[in-house]
Image 1 (tube, rainbow over the protein chains, first blue to last red):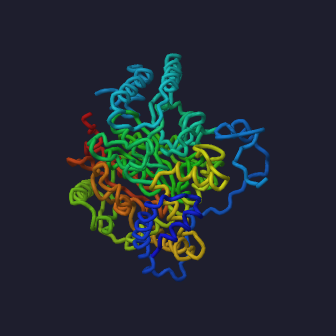
Image 2 (tube, rainbow over the protein chains, first blue to last red):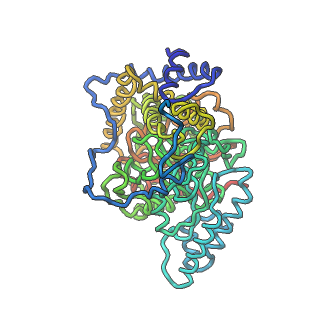
Image 3 (cartoon, rainbow over the protein chains, first blue to last red):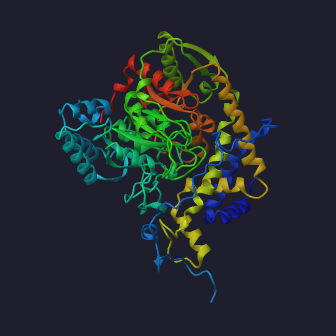
Length: 95
Length: 485
């Protein structure tokens, strides 16, 4: 069972703010989903390897050759705020 | 029949014979858009001027006596989670409401090389998380067969646009059923190819090990034509298969004699409505009468597929969606006290409820101490599900099941209960988990709307799926029905 406190902790990890009233709803809904999911514990998976990926291929390499990349102007075009060719963020360091 | 109701291959013939121009065709589709967007709402963004300019170029080519390719000059709709350079790509989310990608997805470039006429970007569940198109920030799409009902999801706009002639074909993406379930609900043909067959470069990631792009079309022939254009290796996608796709039109053979069809009983059980079961069984009987050998089979691990999916998909999503932080693109909240506060406010105001729920679920399952119990366990059960399909395909060429357990349901019917919404993908999810291909095509109609039949095949055997679907289509007329709108 997850509690309202767990929901608050997970929200912090996910960088989300959940409104007070919504926390109870999420707690209940997440518990319902987790209860459904817990059926997996009935499955015997001893000695079964995990499938992270369905394809047989592993690392895919290419030649280490410089290719054209996105121009800075294009990369910054969607930024809510920019300055001197950089993304601008709220102040991080205390002055 | 109006131009907008015709198929790609019919329209290609008309363009070649100069019976119709690409501009006339595009205008016919745009008039349909004008007429229906208020009620159906398939699109988030329209690219009308570009469409007409491109159609004009194709007409000049035809006038100059040049040969045109099968998709050239034919109006297409693209799901709004595929990047289109300079054209807003929102994923139907507030957090990307103003995002104009600096590059195009590989599939978009491939269709552009084929001379596509893009009508616009289609509505979807926010970040492809949903089965009804109701989680879109821009409001729901409605089912052209029944405006009270949902078109399915998440690629609801792509399915609806093709069903009602707001596009001749479209692209969607499928993580747990997001092409096949809306294809079923809207009475069109939808294919989720083998994982890795179509490049995901430029597809906004939801669950990277499950996502796959595929076509929506009015018939099976069109589906093969679109697959010819989009399948194949892409160096920009490291999960793209190094595989040379075949000419899928060669699979369009009206013959299933001797083919072995498995009917997995787990897909016909509780929750599957009798009308759906009956329509699909009638379809199977027809294929049997045409010489296929049909046999009931069992895939007992199917019962665990939904649980596996609702661990893997939210885990991968919570990681993929960490990039939306209000700094490099998209929505940024006002009045943040500091950097962390900026992340929290931008994300909380930018994401809708279902997206938050899945991020929370995934973050929880991946958080310290829970990894083995959830993510690792799910990946192990995934192996069992995959192995079970591999075993069954040693004896059978394809499997046939319902695509969705019900006909289209009413708007609002499932929005309050996430689990009941998730159940809508119960027949399609196992196929993504195993990475194999699945195709939905119409096999019946009810008062509520269409019913779809799902054909499942072995890895990279799209050709056999298309052959079975084509044979079914040649001997029925479900694909010729159009909604009365």
